[in-house]
Length: 369
Image (cartoon, rainbow, N blue to C red; front, side, top):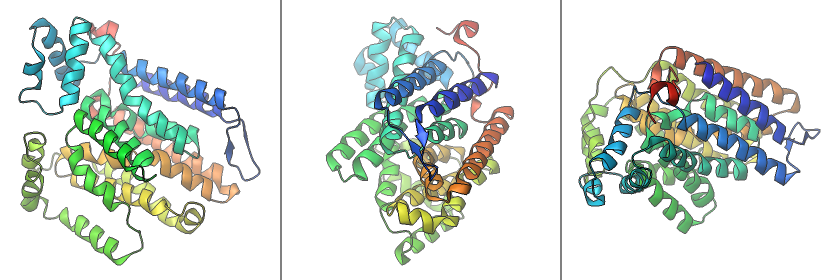
């Protein structure tokens, strides 16, 4: 657990140094662009190295590592890697990296780390109202560490966020399609996320949105009866696993659902003041509502949490908007409460071993170069 706390502490210290000053409204000012870029790049390198030097052999990462090494050791062809495998872009990436680096995991992990985090930093640099808060909640919510086990989802997430915020929300549709295709190449389940991107463009306070959310919430009750038919619409061999997910009680813990609901409640409490400063806030709120619903579904099958992350990660944009919108006297209090609660959430999740993140074993101890 201690390495994760060090990662958070370094990020908190460096990201707080990006702010040149706060104006009389308590809003962060970033006047030195070169300083901002250099410090963000420094945080990026810390995150990448923290990912790359993790040698833990438990969880899904052992399977990813084994498949990667097998490509070189068994002298597999690219055709063999692509055959009967989803996520074609991911297979191309690991094939060439394995052949070039002779099955050495570390250089590949560094490349994967950059692919995972660079798009996230683009979104934060371009769209965040508080870089310090964005970086911290991304770490403390454990979204930054999702790729430690769900490597393909981690690679897909950054491109999906870029597509949504720098493509769809800016009405740059070619950019959106291109970035979503890249995300699809890493994790084909992004197909299920796509319609929810479009639905998030609805107004929050509309009758059709109310009906939509009511139906999605009610779907959690009848999930077993309809989910297989719905997911099978996409079962072209790429996302077929999602049409046959086992519905059982061994799903996500209730604490993950509660934490996903918290930002929704905060946004609704300050909705009027946020709406005044950010007229398009409805779209952000709907994204985290969708994330909450998928997390609710994940209580029946933990696999739904793999889709929830595509929505819940938008807290890196919406929470800074909330903090910026409220009264100056409350800004530091609310920001402090948000960071404290997410920090406690991280500690609880790591302590109980959820998501297979703890313990963090360095690569030189595990011998998994």
